[in-house]
Length: 399
Image (cartoon, rainbow, N blue to C red):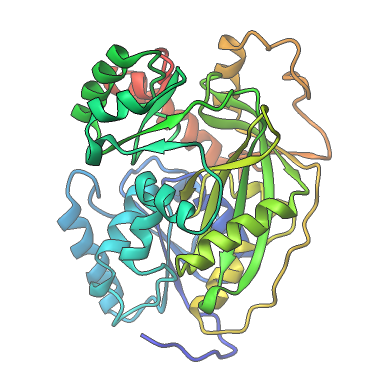
């Protein structure tokens, strides 16, 4: 479906409004008076508690009932009500990317084609693409292709990192310290996840970074910014609990080279770790979607949601690489878990106890739209009563 630019603001359907990243999208488009319908499968969802959507809808659980979810989306967009559809949340984005042929005749979804999407969603594919394009990564082995016994024989330095090719928040990661542990952990992870890779261990005291890019047609760089991860949970390696915007044009260049090299379009998030042994950045993974920490760059002056909306409408987008440095964003619930488990709790900089400041913002809470914070706390609290979800959230085993 090809759109011509005009002076009117097309109505937008936002899928995945239960994801944290829906909040900066709603705020951004709301500032521009874009009429947005927020949709999610949970009644208690941050986006559905927000005051900013024009309409709020619920759809079938996309994980439990994927076909019902896809039918629901197709029914909505076939009406012609939504010329633009934006997507957030890992599972929802993956489903829409895979089945976008069902929606393309009716709405514009600024997502890359599914084959290219899979290069970034699967870490094994990402590592192969990075190697082909000359971008440094930790040394990587592929036991699903070569066999775990063959991989074990090739490793000269232990521990190594065993990780699923598809997961989030460092879940499923193990650090086997020898061949026997590698084989045991490999079999355990394979029972839960679809694929596994083995990587060289990069010490965790190396600084971690995320580069967020918006790529237009032909690989044109439209917007980019970088933030680091001063704190993350679990403390052994996981999702950020505190971020800060930084100046790292080298990481933007590396990320652009990778995404352009694979034919990317839309939002892309490249994660790096700076190897403390030689100071060189190494690519860890690529998230082919809006990430939950995108808010820090939106608040710093890079209006990714609005620019992506403009792309979907077929408008020219003015490139933007200028953003505020030194802005901090905290994910408070996870940061509290970090405080309980980290030996650095009283030595961290900035201090854990610095809750307010002109250079700080919260990932969820916003004085101008406070209700989503209530939905977030209620949702997390309800999950604690389910043993499986409690383990997933708290990750007391380090995974």
